[in-house]
Length: 369
Image 1 (cartoon, helix red, strand yellow):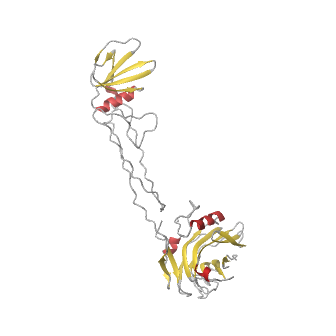
Image 2 (cartoon, one colour):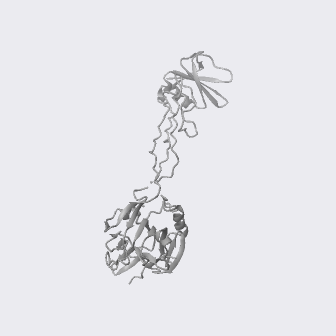
Image 3 (spheres, helix red, strand yellow):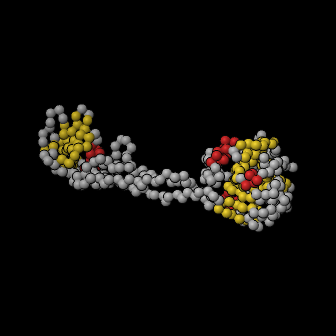
């Protein structure tokens, strides 16, 4: 079987982007075919490099990822060792990851989610900063010294590098998601230090090109904004904040003196689909109307006074201040008649009022503004 290995980690002396389904093709063994740039890496005490590969070469050991620093052209290289070679392996897509941790020195190569090789290198040391990264070649000098016999031939996809050693479970999760997976499953909050989009944005030399893959592209539906529906106090006199949280999806079931509260329009249902950075459709929180009367100074109590018959437009129970606010906001209420009995308060909204004597076992107050 053909196994990938870390050839050199030598001892020293970031919703879906445009990179999805875009494959980098290296058509031939030529030292003119490569991508080269300075990724401005800091010193690292852990790292992981992963990619999907489809090799198409003549059986030689070839290298697809090379990081060199001054004084060490093999600071980090990833390639293939020719143990045995078959036509099936030659054209098959495989998922390859190389992970290294300084504390243990373990450098682990995983193929299709399973660890196949572990060596100990650079224990207690660091991958040095300021080096040059080349995709498709092995560097014998920083940024150069290429050999066509070592040049990569085939296709590369979704090359990413992290600044820590990923766990075997995380690597297996990426493989299990499949080549056409959109997200890094199990890697929430862990963005690559070098992303595939970063690599695709760099200059491609020679005959290196980007071609479309065979993954199905799922289009996200346009984001639907939910309408904001409010029931103004001026239209619904009995609308005031209860002690519980104010509802945000519908108006209270209250009959207004002149008209009903308008029905809330339902938020359009957005079809559930796996798309990156999907925005949820939700209604914003609604500010609660205040329960304090608008002009406290104008409310005056008239003791032993009750309303005339046929002028009531509703009751408010439990809070005199709330009744004042509702009466003031309605535009038709001129007074409230509040009765207190055994600590409970009940207020009636009035359009006019007249005097009446004090009732037995109950005191009546009329407030007018």
